[in-house]
Length: 233
Image (cartoon, rainbow, N blue to C red; front, side, top):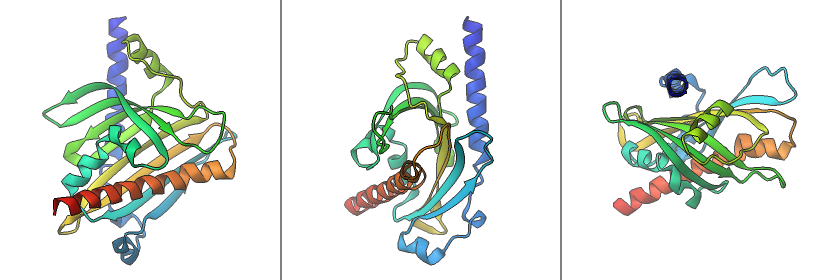
């Protein structure tokens, strides 16, 4: 049994490391960004659809925004998930259930995090369970929904993982930040979200998932970072 656990954990960690490295080269040159709008503080969204043979839908959304605060300050904001429920409008809470490991040499932290998204649809479970990687050295955070196999694995380790939303078949994404050119007090904030929905849902729910929640999250990070910047000055 212990050997099976170790193999399962190794597969989990390898898959998430590969996932993060796939996006580590993200930069503005890959997107048709309106620089004037970016510097005004506008969020710019880019959509990519994926072929899905089922009745659901699969889409990737990339948001890019300029934050008037240094990279280290923005990192402290985006890596503190447990505080996000206080100021992100579409989120009730994030709660760290378990820290899987922390590699001091590479500054990588891996956590199991439970969240509650305020999806505007009654009578459905709005809870999600995520495996989250914090790559401080690369200013990158990646996450995926826990699979059933992972849930069983961590439940056997005594971690209380509650039942989650069953309509979100897959959800993964990452945030990445970089200094904006040579300006030490400006940061480019990327947010990439890929969602696969298992069943047809109303348009307003898709709009919430694909746009409203993403914009609300990014604007909240921008406002909070810039407020902290003003306070420090």
